[in-house]
Length: 206
Image 1 (tube, rainbow, N blue to C red):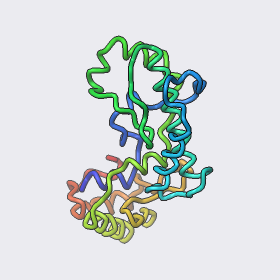
Image 2: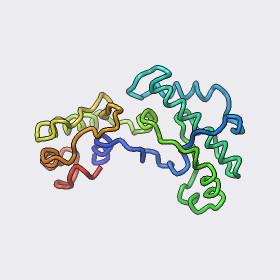
Image 3: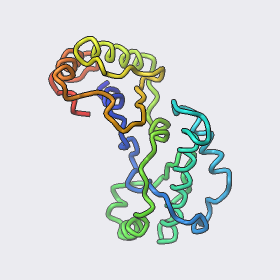
Image 4: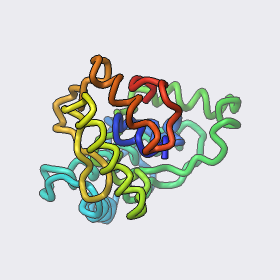
């Protein structure tokens, strides 16, 4: 339950367990050895419409996912050119790199990563939404109960979860709610038991 609250309060890029290897954009498409066909963009567009919670046009969530997939393919191409044979990214832009811990100690991988560092890009929100775990009906109800409790106990700006149990931000880059106000701290203590969070941890832990 604690994880659910953290995901709803601050949806962050660490959803990507293999982010060490996965953020690339910017190189020329001709440098990619294999992944150059139009099917990748089509697959990305399809993925972008699965569970983005955003707009469905190519200029919206689907386009954001497709652009990320293309960026990842260019990063993979760069890594291959520098001696690291990685598979093509999937329809959500994810690249299976294997044991990340071992890669950190692999001189070839480290060198290639350094050479391709300028291709790294931030994981877009549309992809974050695709990658976050699907909540059960019980977990969604817990999120709703927690939001209701927070709003009634001092954190009136605490966001309501959507149908999937996650609160959507407005893409402004601003915090979804003020976690540092006296009301937020009071509400966090009052509502901690709903999500099984230790009382008094404070709202800034996520």
